[in-house]
Length: 416
Image (cartoon, rainbow, N blue to C red; front, side):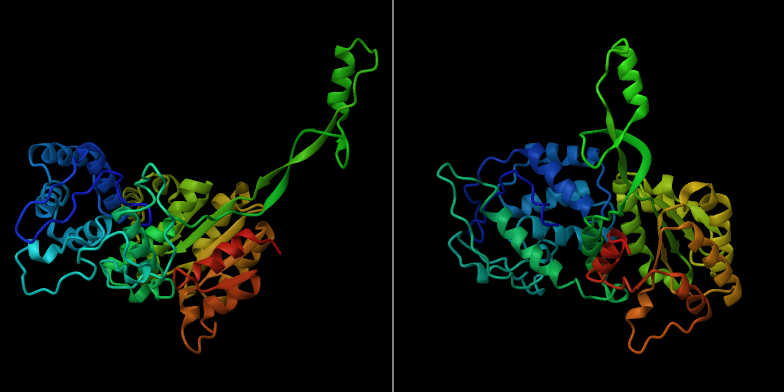
């Protein structure tokens, strides 16, 4: 969420009971920027509600921060359950200058750390965000002669404060995240870039002479166009294309603490890298089309509606068989990087799991297994399904936290 601060000017905090001399606010820019910040934090904020906020700010100019808070809350919040996330994003975007509790009639609540008045000359180590976590000391570049609002001021301070809060979540186990932390981690996971190694395709392109091969067809066609009078030699080199990426995600009851994060990761790979997505519990469901929506919340809602066996039992071998028979042998798994996200707890026998993994091994370029229970103390892959599948895997990673997902990204990117 380091880029969620809107570019519109934010009214400065004035005296305790008065109205400060607030700069003029561009209502449309502020409404669009803040609406984008809320969407990236996981709150559904349709464009029409941003338009309502812009109209409200024109009718009630935000000369005081409580006016800005209530205008935003009335137009953008749709239910009481959204209030914690809305308050956290509001405080982060506007650099903690507002304590949402004092505007909700809760005077006994302690003030948000960082709500004190600061000047731009405050040293970096004194900067604090809405979570109370101190930001690491950084040197603030000097302002340009003309004044660059993107390099200093409340927006920059909010970026630094949120960066430190996100770093504290890198090693937190997904099963231990609070709802507010889950929102922030999902925003971080969406920014991960998953790229597969390249492979040479059968198609070729023109290339200069060197390690390129002579392209006889293009050379003959060039000679015919020249009337047989010695056309130029044409060389070609095979094109390089990224390998296909396929996700098979376990959405059974035992994986429920991790499903939302993993599907957020898969949604980003589908929308950004053209990956294929399947989920399985008691049966296999293809969700590539549902997860291709640009809005992650809409994509996850469509995915949960399409998979009717959500949080059921686990038919691991049967799901692998369906994938191979219906999709893998027809091309999706051939030469692909296949990522299986599951704890290996299955109703199938180990022999059945091993037989299907052997079939998948003959098709795929690499098989990466992600098991969040691997991070547990003293863990050993002794569960029947996991023990049977492990010999056919190229990589075995935990993926239990945001920091450990970097191992998954490296395993997908790097070849053997």
